[in-house]
Length: 205
Image 1 (spheres, rainbow, N blue to C red):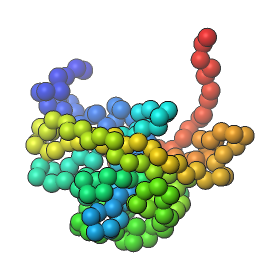
Image 2 (tube, rainbow, N blue to C red):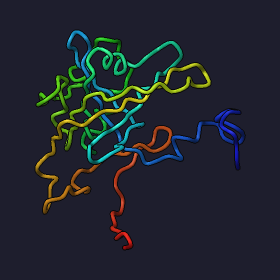
Image 3 (cartoon, one colour):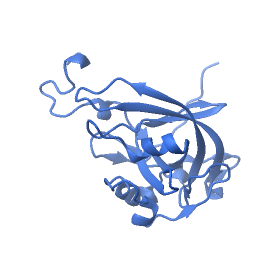
């Protein structure tokens, strides 16, 4: 089938927006921020990825759930433009999902969901203690996207990675062992996945 996106994202026979299921698997950025009063927020975003290795930059999209609303993460970054990308491993999958529930503004998800925290070195928001890796970031740029078909606000946050925490046990012979990272990936709809077969392909010269 073929359809023009401007005519709608659910043409027959589709009953759901197919975009999430087409662009997958996606890494999950478990983003921790602080509000103006110093209260921590922790929320997962699967519209997240690395965009540059050197210098290291990441991006994620804290898009509103409905018109006239904004995510706590988005509001927090306006007050404290720093965030941590905590990489989600299999062991943290359930509690990561718990932090996605719509808590009222000002609720600390670390406390509400029983997530242990650790301080960062260069920025103010805390990181997730159990994360196999965490990226300390400062906001580099906010990008305003066009509103969604229902009027929802959409944004992209680009962050400069200023510090990286890595669990020693995932480093093997000078490299990160992806199997030991045990990442959780977002698929389509409410589906998630883990690493299957890992194989190497040498680039042609």
